[in-house]
Amino acid sequence: MAKDKLFGKHLLCTQDWEVDELIRALELAEDMQKERFSGKYYDVLKMRTYMMFFYNPSVRTRQSFECAATELGGHAQFLEPKSMRLKTKKTAGETVEDAAQVMARYGAGVGIRILEDKIGAYGEGQKLLEDYCKWSPAPIHSMAHDKFHPFQGLADVMGLKKHLKTPDYNFKGKKILQVWGKGALARSWCSVQESILINSRLGMDVCLAYPEGFDLDPEVIALVKANCKANDAEFEILNDVDEAYDDSVDVVYSRNWMTAGAYKGGEFDKPGEIEKSLQHTGWICDGPKMAKTNNALFIHPMPIDRGNEVSDDVASGPRSIVYDVAENRLHVQKAVMALTMGNLP
Image (cartoon, rainbow, N blue to C red; front, side, top):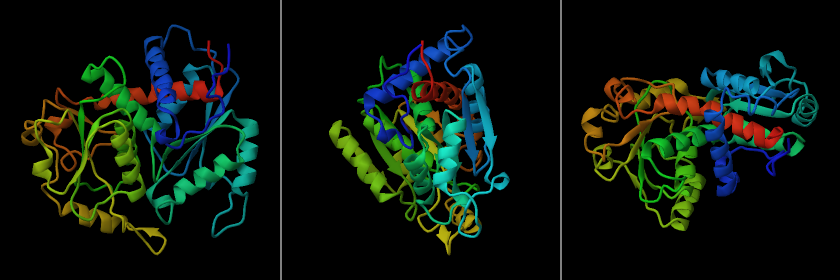
């Protein structure tokens, strides 16, 4: 058993890792899927604990991380801020410096999930994770925060490689339509921004489509443009949903996301965001739109707002790979945990 060169490395966004490091994790995830119950990786996290710090609840994230730790021979511990005495703007308690250093002495790694209503302004989640990285000797992983969702991005491209039938993770010549969908959940930008970042780094053409007023983080858009330029790939932004769907599209990712004005007075205006969203009735991924594509795959990080973001016939249709991608979360999380905090065969 030996530690990997990535041992101890944080993961807040896939953009922070080199492409060869991402591919190392993805190829390991593929082998872990194949060897899931063979015993090959059963001792990678033996006697190690993974601290899961949930500001926001989740279904797949908690389940997949707990399964991941178990299948690698370790343990995942569920933590919630409400059951911990942490310093906030309104209360006294442990600082990030103290909490990070203590948790790192108990556990071999720390995952943090903080979204939407648990922050008062876009960027606060990113800042919190950066502070934990500053003070923690153990690797810090984003389990989704306001800006990025690295494990979802890895799970997405693992599924795309399989279903696009590419021999490797070079997606040159393929095109993803990252399209806004109306919805009643008022979602953050994290999954969408992660998707366009990682796919552009792997050479894919990116079309980003949304109604006026739903622009993403300009710094992230600048990074996507740079990624595309480096890979001689195309990037475009459209505000017309019908124009976005055409026969050049190989992948459709329809997802609701908030506006840049979602935070007001230090609070997340969820009712206001839902009201603005539901006005855009034509922005749904449905059968007629998908018929205009190059027999495109449909992906989504879940939970799916069926009937708003996407119609049932697409979400549950033959070109939907949403369940494969959901399963992939388990395997990519195992791979990153093994590389950054475990011992590999």
